Image (cartoon, rainbow, N blue to C red):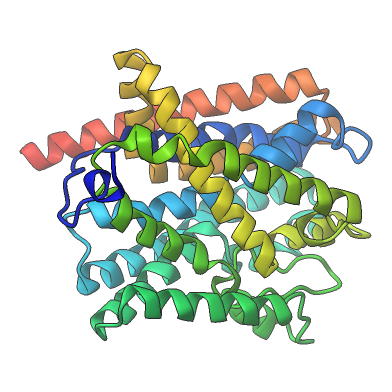
Length: 377
C-alpha cells in the first residue's frame, strides 16, 4: 500500500480513538501510585525497583508528557476547538488549577496545623502551594495561547516554530531564583523558578512544555487522516522505542537532563519539571511510540476493558482533582499524625494508592452521573 493510500487528504479517521483514550487513562490510573511513592518513600527506598518504576519511568515519560501530547490530539477531534472555545476552556482550567490547590493543599494543610500545631510544616509553605503552578494551570495557559495563535490565523508550522523557540528559551533560563517570592510564584507559571526554601512550585512552566501539546496537535492532524492505523503505527514502534530508551540510558549514565539529580528532592524534581529541550523532544518521541503500543493493546482488549479506559479518559479531570485531595490528606496529615512520619513500606504505599484510585474513580463516576441527571432535568 502506497503512502497516499493510507494517509488521505480528507479526515477519514473520525470518532473516539481507543489508543488516545488509553494514553489518557493509563497516566491517570498510575497517578495515585506515583504521588504516594513520592510522598511516602524515604530517600533510602525511593530508588528501589518498584518506587523507581513509578517515580522515574511511569511518573516521567509515561505520565504527564503523554497526557499533554494526547491533549493536543484531542483538540483535533473535539467539536469545540475554535480559538474562542480554546481560550474559554483554557481560562476555566487555569482557574480550576488554583481551586485544586486550595482543595489539595489549603484544606489539608490547615487541618494538619489545627491537629498538630506545626507551623513550619503546614503554614509556612501554604501560600506557595496554593498559588504555585501545576499541570492544570499549564493546560489552561497552553489552551489559551494556542487559541490566541489560532485566532491570529497562524499556520501549524508557524505555531510549531514558536513552540520550539519557547522550549529553547525555557531550557536556557530555567532554575531561576528572582530573589522575590511573589515574582518566583508568578513567573513560575511561565519559566522554571525556584528558591532556597524549596517552597516555590514551578511545575510544567509553559515556555518549556508548550511544545508537547503543540506536537500532539500536529500529530492529531495526521492521525485523523490515517486510513490504516496498523500500517501507520507498527513500523514506528521499535524505531521510536530504540531512540527513546537509548537516549534515556545515555542520560542516566551521564547524569544530565531529568536524570541530573540534585542535592535536595526539590532540585531533583525540578530537573524534570523544568525540562531541557532534548528531554522534551524525547518525551514526544516516547509519546508517539506509546500511542502505537496503546493501539495494539486496545485492539486486543475485551470490549468492557476498553469501555473502562474510555470512562477513565472521559473523567480525567475529575479523577485528577479527587485523587490529589486524598493523597495529601492521607499522607501529609492522617498518616503523619498517627505515625509521626509519612514514610511507609512499599507494599502499604501500593495498597494506599489502589484505595485512592478506586475512591477517585467511583467518585468521578458519581459526579458525572449527577451532572448528567441535572442536564436532563
